[in-house]
Length: 248
Image (cartoon, rainbow, N blue to C red):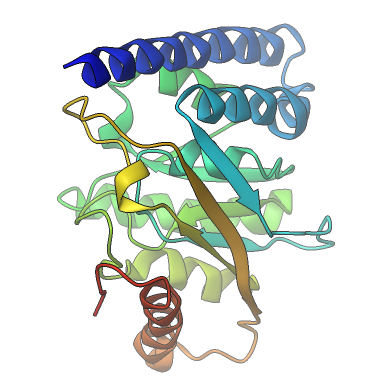
């Protein structure tokens, strides 16, 4: 009981930091007419994200070293934890639009922070027509604005602590836009992975590393599923190398 109360306290502090970050960052974006959006992405949001992880007892081991790309890239990652958003924000990616599901819009503190860095919200899978139009317009925006995209290969569904099936839409987008795929792997120990029931978590180290950068210029639409399977197998192999639960 004592551990649970302690965790709720740290969670509440983290939530306060998230809300504060969202209000400050969104205000900066609004008053600057969008000119400080990259400042939020590179400096403000990463600083707050590291503070939130520290509050929860999480140490981040970051092995990802990325140079500013001269063309749009698609940054993708496995989605195994509620901590993933904070972990990825620590990378400080500029000129990059993150993709999030519309299902997350009701998390107001997170939405404030998302709007501050220009997150794009994907229609849910049941809204097939809106979802298709979203990706068509996104491909056009990528070519027009020369902006990179970051999004989970697994979406928001499925189970944590494994590698779920990959979504086809984001890879079709990468193919159409001829964006190199930057495959980023996140490992969160099960005992340090927070749930929605305020289950106490142990202090731990989360690891984030670069698996590969994969060109798509030679990809063919008819081979897309095969390419997706190859990338997913790379994630499964890496996930299983950490031991514990096994992904298939």
